[in-house]
Length: 125
Ligand SMILES: [Ca+2]
Image (cartoon, rainbow, N blue to C red; front, side, top):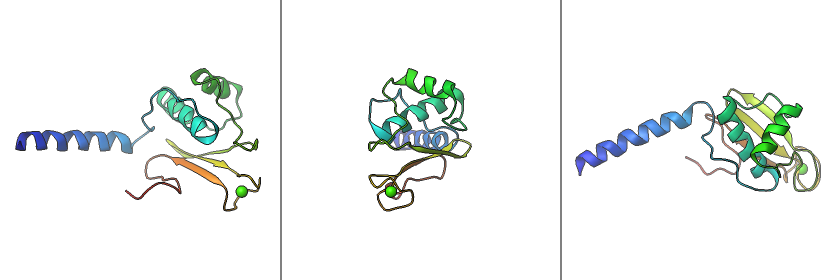
């Protein structure tokens, strides 16, 4: 029993280390609307390319994201362009301006990825 606990401890240590550096480990993107679908595709991009893209402006980036999932959209659920910002190596922020279309208001939806980065809605760790 004690041996099992030691092995479990090592496994958690290794997994924690892997999750704390570089790209978020991602499975192939799941179909999904809005920010989550885009975030999922970007996680997979990061896994494949070694980091998140500098911007979403390039055709190559968009084509690659859509090769992971054809329904990936650069617009949010209200049709507003999603704001993308690479905030460091292996880190990004996606922002929907929400229903009001105005950035920085309470209805904005924000997803952040990366080591030491949390989204506003994430539960404390
Ligand atoms: Ca807003």
